[in-house]
Length: 218
Ligand code: DX5
Ligand code: ZN
Image 1: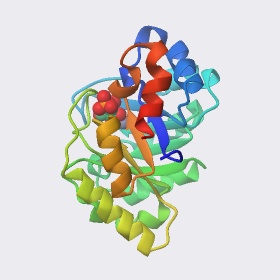
Image 2: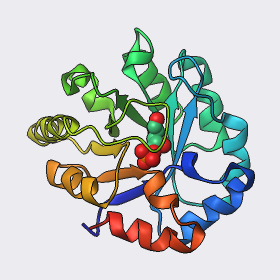
Image 3: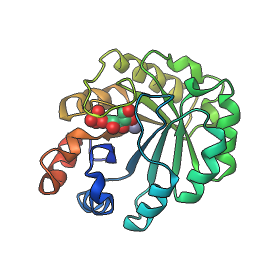
Image 4: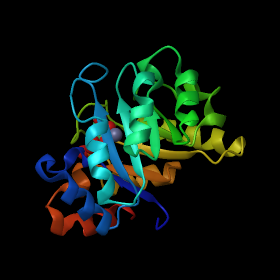
């Protein structure tokens, strides 16, 4: 729907001109800017760190939705907060003390998110849900753009939606991986309010960004 938050993943952008790409998706109607941080350890790929985020910060006033696929995560939280992240999302699978990680993110004043790999149940978050601004349901195994949506994750979105509503929490549900106009519809019906999309936004180049983003809103 019109109120769905669209957060294009710059993982699918042209890395030789990231500043321009961020400005282009901002002007094309992106609500947030999704930044995928990978360490070659928690996930089998390497991307960018706080330095690049800091350099991108002046290119858009939209919230930076920073998805950390790194382990350990706690030693880097301050650096991402200072670089200009508005939301910092980490994986409970990345270490044994996720509650501490959430507290650390909150202590920076940034919004706190939890990202769940496809095999991780939503119930994992039972005891931290009250402290989270965002749950990021991964609908692919993290590491790469351009993968296919894993349908079983719709049931996870539905379960989280029920839990969040039953507990009266304001927690947003965001979905990441293989989101295109078709799967976007399914995610929204299942109860998601925010969608990450890389290849579905950046395909066709800058002239297509506006239509690509609009198509995800359904
Ligand atoms: C995957 C990343 C995603 C990815 C999405 O590890 O977290 O944000 O870039 O890309 P698409 O939309 O192409 O699946
Ligand atoms: Zn992501």
